[in-house]
Image (cartoon, rainbow, N blue to C red; front, side):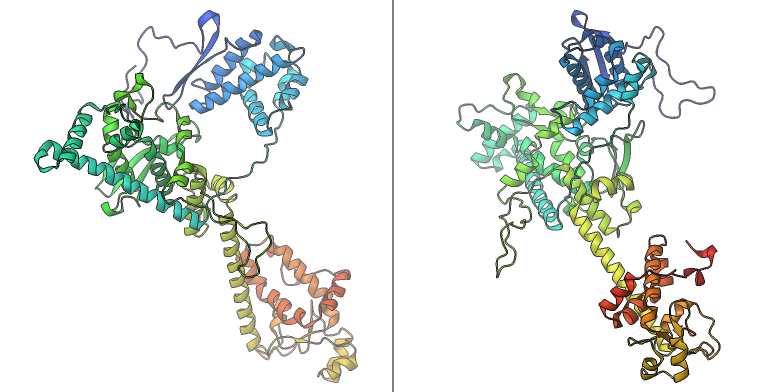
Length: 637
């Protein structure tokens, strides 16, 4: 098959086709001793073979092999090696379960709903494991070519709605922990760069001017020349510590396995990418005027034909190469260039390993660990690196369950080394970026959607929750202060705000409180009542002198407003209605429309009654809030 590049097809220009006689390989082939084998070839060019021969229940092998081939084939939903392994392990678990039954169904048509239910509820397995395997087997059987072979009741049991088990999210680091981790990784990567650059400088001097070196440097330089020409590190087996000395010798020109932990940790912090994308960093890139570097990253689990993302990383000045993603990426290529030339890989991460196997010594010790299998990432012992470096990276001290010390405050447990994982780093840098952007999720989403960012990274992070609570508290405090200022400004123009009479509501008590006799009698009889309070002089607005035509919500800022104990139930009903509206209206709109009245009721009116009086009024049946008097129906939310 030939390819002419993007844009080569179109009207009258058919796509390239295989040569004549081409036959696609069968999805299921026959292996040794007649067993059935499913071949997997992923979009990342990783391959695997899954042999059903050693498994029990041979009557199930044909249908399971075909189902697995459809699931991991070119038209299936599984396109990664790790995903195909999950599918294979689920198929094996299904066969092992059927074989363990007292009367196992030997053929597909013998399967019943009870068998499927027992597989989903089988003891001895974690709930998350059973959920994943049940969902995967449903995916394998859902193709019509497979599902029509299953009995109807069994297939119906597979199609049930599965409740996803609750899983605790992975929290991130505190601000101090992330700063300490970043500083430690940056210091160690700087030390690695100085070491390899010093070795390259000694190599150039040994080649160009060996006479300018002392005897010890000349001997080491000659050794480095041989290593650079052959790529082979001398064995040094006569020395007791030959493995350590051999690794130190290789470290003059190559990155080693011990260097990988700080390099990967710093890459995760600076680039803000997950571990899978960093493991597959390519060598191929494009420089943009020496100011930025353009790289095509692999972003898995984004759906078919959405695996690749082009990113542009700032390079910055040479002195800041450990602080910018582009500078660190170019430094990585520089440190791994010699190993990459020897092993011929197109991966950015290549280094030398001190191999114990004699057959794999020599040039074979240079390799790209993640080129064929991302699972080798389990060997990146970032937590061990953080705990064993000269100055360990420590976690924040946790409160001790012991009683408080009288003078020093709460007792603290001794600090422990920080647990370093890609997930925790990704959570921390995503939370940091979200805080820097003011919490705006659409702008903060970088390599995930806003929903995934919140659900998987921000919501489980304790420091993010604390920051969000502080932001909300400050915002509410600012909104309440703005409402109080607006209330004070209006009351200054309208006679100083409502008159609150906390004594008995009889005419005599009201007259003794300073009201005119007729006003006291009208107020006592309810003749001056409005929606929630009473008005002393409706015909003379304190601000305009004309008859008042303001909203009833403006009464709470007016000097003509009168409030007695009898008005408490209506005021409480109003506050409750405003609380309900707060759940339906935008927070800014609510504070602008109702905030000043809410503050006036809470601060200037209710605060002048005793808590017992307010509680007694709350126990009564609260009347209608009467908000329709101030909110036309077409404006109500």
